[in-house]
Image (cartoon, rainbow, N blue to C red; front, side):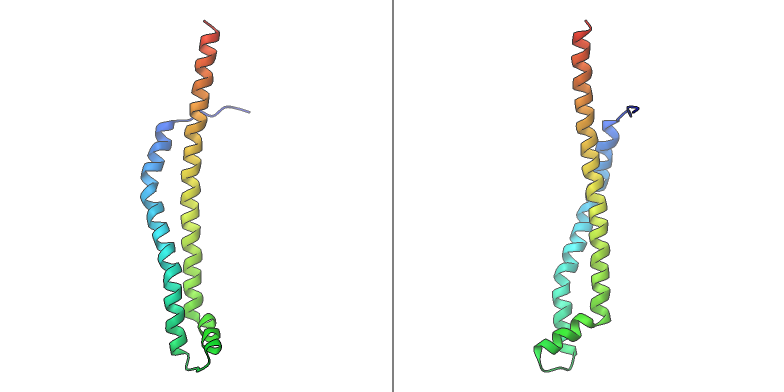
Amino acid sequence: MSERKIDPHKAIDFIFENAPKLAHAKSDRIFLEEFRKSKKAILMQQSGQTVVSAQERDAYAHPEYIELLRGLQEAVEQEETIRWGLIAAQARIEVWRSQEATNRSQDHLTR
């Protein structure tokens, strides 16, 4: 297995550049999670039903509610993609640290 050279500066730059994207993706997800409750209430009001369970059924089946769920699905996917990219960048830095420590140990042994 060939050893790939890790550039910790690139990993840090990646983290720095993508941290705001993660924050934005997370805020989108949380907004959609909270708005889902409001959307359900609005759709229940508009359903024309008098029984709460029927209103709820209508709200959950409404195309706008389903569209909101698809938006939430996309928001979670974006957030997770960015989050795992940041975790991978952090792991690269840790691998680089370990490699550097090993290199220093080997340098001391060969002197």
